[in-house]
Every structure is written in C-alpha cells, then in structure tokens.
Length: 79
Image 1 (cartoon, rainbow, N blue to C red):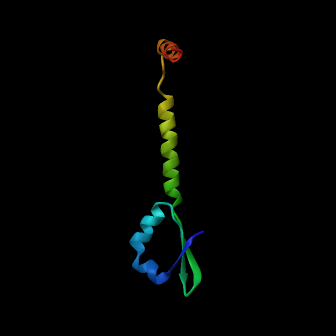
Image 2 (image 1 turned 60 degrees about the horizontal axis):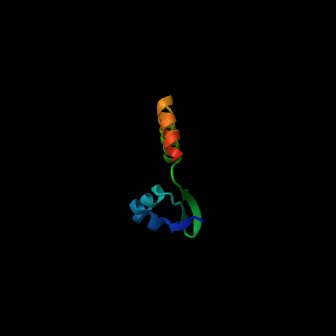
Image 3 (image 1 turned 30 degrees about the vertical axis):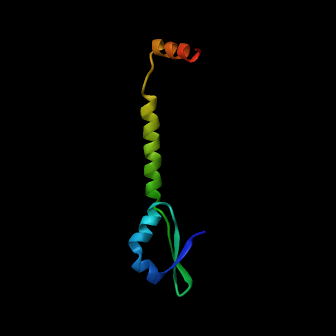
C-alpha cells in the first residue's frame, strides 16, 4: 500500500521523498484528503537494471574454457 502524503508536505519534503522513491517506495499525493497523484519509481531504472544483468550474462557466456581446463576442473572436483 502506498503511503499518502499531503500536497504541502510533498512540496516541503520533495528531496527526501524523491530519494525514497528512487529506493523503490511509492506515494500517493493528496489534496484536502483526496488522492490526486501517484509518485512511483521510474520504469527506466528497472530497464537499466535488466539491461545490465543481460550484459553481465552475455559477458560471462563469452568466456570459453578449453577442454584441458575443463578436464582438470572435473578431476579436481572428484577429490
């Protein structure tokens, strides 16, 4: 559930609220008790995180292991 914040508090505490949104929290901004806006983390951050994860996986995939090294690793694991 989103935390509700009055418009005055949202205005006066905007830097703090933005830091909290950046860390994943979401808020509903109210005006006179009525919800008027939702403040949620940007989807771009999630896209960046996913893109970085895919790049890391692809980078790991490029590392080839020679047959000799693979055989040595297998033998070492059997001890």
